[in-house]
Length: 163
Image (cartoon, rainbow, N blue to C red; front, top):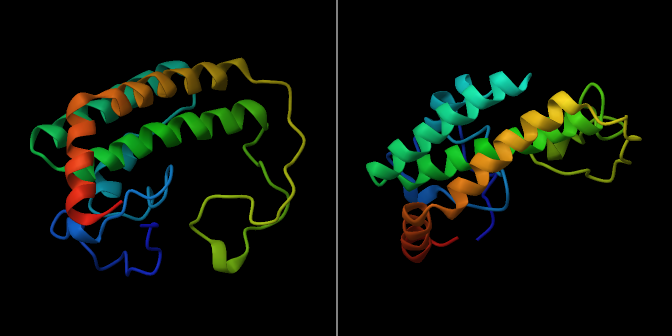
């Protein structure tokens, strides 16, 4: 089932109502799903490799803690933040200033990933600092996706509530 952007994210506590959560594709909902956004976002940073390493390690620790208490939604959100660390650091590695697309996000697409019909800006010479930060997040993201407990809890979640 696709990620449901029509939910009132200001009112839903996904820890109390995991049945409303959808894994979706990629990073969908990463900046919407509470209380996890509030728990994980303060640790999400990628400015330098050192900052990225500390951030990725902290978020992976949260990922493991969520798995330990069988909180799949929390674990999946932590996985999404690791993925977003990779994708955003890569964006800054490829586009100085981080602006990937020309023009504003259409009003009806705010909060959703994608080009939404906008042209991609020309790439800058690769920023090696941001590329290294991206590689750090990529390694932790890969580790999270391969984690047997994560895979098991994801299968259980999807069997119970849908994808």
